[in-house]
Image 1 (cartoon, rainbow, N blue to C red):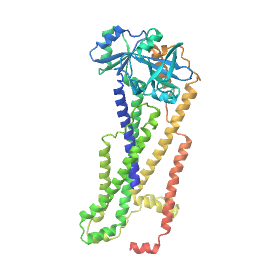
Image 2: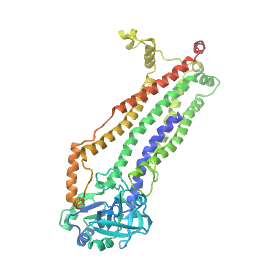
Image 3: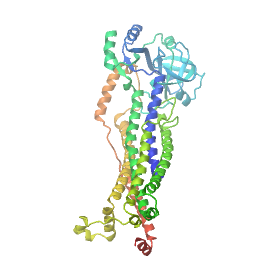
Image 4: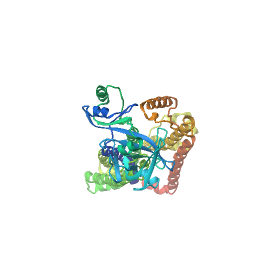
Amino acid sequence: MVLMIAIGTGVFLGFHIEWKSLEQNADAFLRETKYADYRLYSESGFTEDDLRSVRGIAGVDAASRFLSIPAAVKGTSSSVALQVTENAAVSSPLVMSGAAYDENGDGIWLSDRFADENGIRLGDTLTLTYLGLEISGPVVGLIKSGENMICVADENQLMPDFARFGFAYVSPQKLAGVLGTVYYPQFHLLSGLEKTVLEDRLRAATGTTLLVTAKEEHIAYAGMQSEAEEGKTMGAVLPVLFLGIAVLTMVTTMHRIAANEKVQIGTLKALGFRDRRILLHYASYGLAIGLAGSALGVALGCLIASFIIGPSGMMSTYLDLPAWKLVMPGFCIPVVLASLAFLTLISYLSVKRMLRGTAADALRPYTPKAVRKSAVESLPLWSRLSFGTRWNIRDILRHKSRSAMTLLGVFGCMLLLVGGLGMRDTMERFLSMLDRDISHYRTKLLLTESAMLPGGVGVLYILITALAREYELSLAIGWRTCIVSIALTLGVSLLVSRMVARKNKKIDMVEALKDAA
């Protein structure tokens, strides 16, 4: 019982700590790096006059021209997203080690994970190439960036690969010294305005219609929110099943304990112990089990969450965050306390029924409830069934609640098996379809940077929308999943039945009849 409560509580806390920690850590990181609320795009680029016009809009707290271009690392097969922000108060990098970001500096601020994967250290000279030009300088800082919290080269890259792709920041002055001038196709804004209101004010201030995207549409923020929503969904389904199975097991266990100790309960009552004291004694049993299981469950939940949320956890392969702190949602503590109260109530009610009547009634051994002849026994097929089969059917009909709990427990375990293995089958089929049916190329060649501009974004959006209509992600459950799930369920059921049968063979029939009398 303690183990079941610990698993149920641990899974419940683990899933909810995961999504809450992800939200808290990511939000703190995005606030620290001044992650932009809105992004503006223009094919012709933004001038300083445009910058002054945008900054003068009521409700815009800060604005900065921004540039992100693909640059290759000379002498390697790696590349980076080379980024420039004119105003460190918007979309700025977070320096993990080295010098602070300087808008007039001559160095390069490089992703710390990219540097670690490629053996680059502070002080090393790095040369980046763009359009045949070389941008060279010392690595003066190792950074993280909210803009690159999910660091992928493009929409076709599902997972970050810092050994091959990273990001870097340089100052506007350094890039202008190499290119001669800097072309800024983006504006990054900090603003609490609604998107429609901001668009109207931008149109009035600039006299043109601009493409405006909110942070919810940016890959970093949208990807983080998607992971958090997935965690909430999983936390609302799987833990409920585990806790439900644990509660059902507790109900069955306490019923058996109360039935087996009915004579002892009657003896205590005959000796003068009050019903209240007897009830408190057995209720404390359920409370003790709940406390022990909950304590182990809290430790297990934190352990599960640390495997997912942590510097070396599964989520760190997707999100690049500076801090991984575990945070428990506020509603988890009331839920755990409610489960403790419910377990105590189960123990209380299981014994209270035994105390009804006089001490003589309580001293009588437990007698199973008499069952009438059921409709199943009236069927012509009933007489053809073996004795063991009829015995099992009568036991099921006699103990309806216990049979329902067993059925629900098997159903929940089967659901977990099919759901977990089916999720793997679904993703394998999706990835196979993506590589085989959608992406027919082996190498992607970027001829110009126009794909980074609104026109290219619009075309890409149309293509992706069309592909989404043609290639829908559908549920896939392979035959191996069905076989493994059924085999495990039947195997465990047969094993338990075998263990019970062997135990029953050791019962002496004469002694059992004496005890029953």
